[in-house]
Image 1 (cartoon, rainbow, N blue to C red):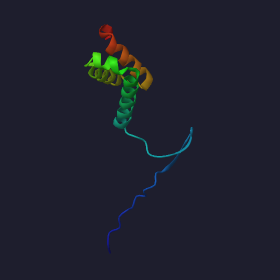
Image 2: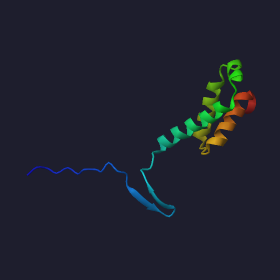
Image 3: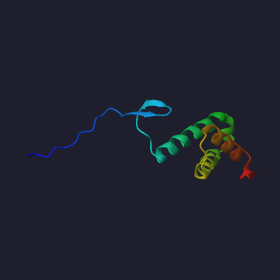
Image 4: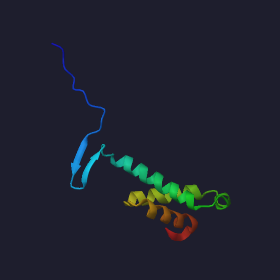
Length: 95
């Protein structure tokens, strides 16, 4: 007799919760943090005009450091992370 292998379907599972029914798999903690970082960084960069980015060449590194610091502290809202990062990057004595 040959060994049977269990096949997994390629379609996502249907889950039912108190909030409703949804398709998909839960993302891991790391994937959620990566998406949050990406969204916050894009929001912060969109607020800076190109002229200001040229005048302050290290602004992207300061934004990066501020966003990482906030994520390690447990921040969960991309908008608040982005605007706090802008404040930290443009006003150097805020952290």
